[in-house]
Length: 219
Image 1 (tube, rainbow, N blue to C red):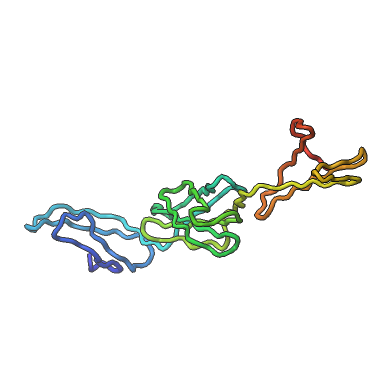
Image 2 (cartoon, rainbow, N blue to C red):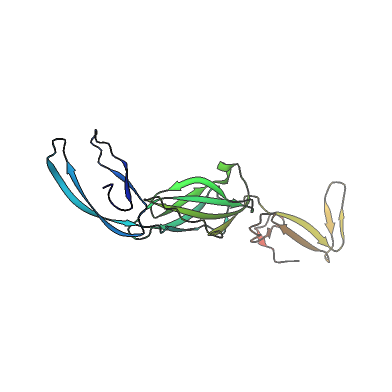
């Protein structure tokens, strides 16, 4: 096999029952047929066979998706990975970028062509923020996908609740005990704010004299 153009022997243990003989290749990209013979220690013929081998530099591909907003404690990042030709995916790695601080290898890897990463910011001593994600696939012959030019998905991780303040438009008076008095011509205004990173205020409700919550639609 050493005589094969573009192929060289890199590992062969003749003293064990190893079931693999490893070769490296600098042959041009293409399809090759390797024929081999297995001979025992008494030089008796045992077996011959042939395999078709494809030399390829083609790299696998992958993509990731995640929710727009999340506050559950762990962001689910789905991925799909695809090999080229007869190659299979060995594993896929998740990368993240929080608030444009730079891309970081999460250290999270999954096997198979698809799956879901559970990315918990607290595991990385991180908190609320805008998280970008992409994945890098590696196939079973060691070809690694190039990093994409941009993120596959972005998730705003927001665990901070919004706040609401009360404002009066018209005559009002507050006594020493903190009670507020208004007349029938005074309007109240509720100002709701969601601090950054903001997923946004969905709705604001108020209650009068312990009534059922009422949707606030403006003063």
